Structures are given as structure tokens and as C-alpha cells.
Length: 96
Image 1 (cartoon, helix red, strand yellow):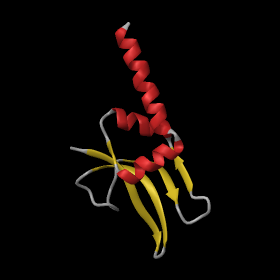
Image 2 (tube, one colour; image 1 turned 180 degrees about the horizontal axis):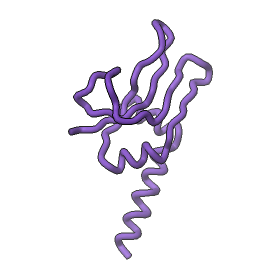
Image 3 (tube, helix red, strand yellow; image 1 turned 90 degrees about the vertical axis):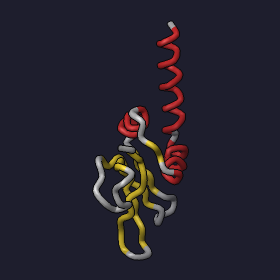
């Protein structure tokens, strides 16, 4: 099965709050999920983003696809830079 990291909408009408979850692609947007790795609150100023970086990186390394919006949140938090550093270290270790 294809695993995705995407947003799960929470909150009431006109007051959205999102959880960042790891789920199978065939599950509904707000359906069941495998693991919750963070949250995103766009209502407050500035928007609050909290992501468990280590868990997110592990899922990406296992092959999880990341949605466009979550990818933008990862860039803001610097998680993609850490992923590139990890890949570079692995490549250096294999070449030795």
C-alpha cells in the first residue's frame, strides 16, 4: 500500500485546525491513520506548526509520499534540509 503524509482537518466550521498524519492513500482525508506526527494551526498569527522531525524523517525514508501542503510546512520547519543531510551522510558512508 502507498503511505502518505498529509493533513487531517479538525476544528469547527470556519475555524480549521489540522493534524499532520501518516495514512494509507486509500483512506479518507479525515479517516483512520497510522500515526500522528504533528499539527498545524493557521488561524493564530503567526501560524503554529509542530512536527516530530525524527518520526517524519523515518517515514519519508521508508517511502512515504508527502502531500504538497505538508511539503511546504516541512520546508518552513527545515525538515527537508535535514533529510538531504541524512542522505548525504549515507552516501558518504557507502562510498568509503
